[in-house]
Image 1: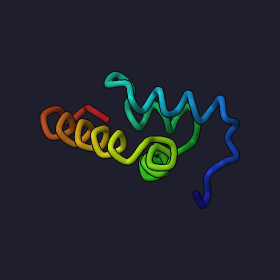
Image 2 (image 1 turned 45 degrees about the vertical axis):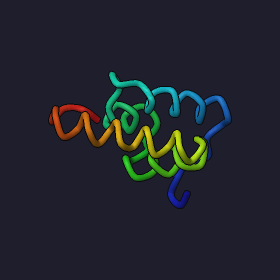
Image 3 (image 1 turned 120 degrees about the horizontal axis):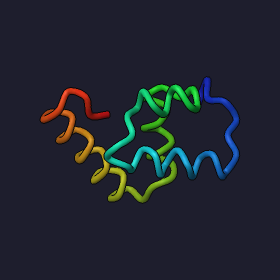
Length: 71
């Protein structure tokens, strides 16, 4: 990912867990790790199976449509 800070495997794993959580927003991840939403999506695409990534994106999109504050 261009402009992505070098992240250890442990940090990548933590970011994936944060992104999978329904209680952590992209803004929270950016504050803690400096990754923008697009970078988080790329990280997720690279670290999840294709079907898992699509299911995650659908869930984020569906929740975002229902609640403005989600992700």
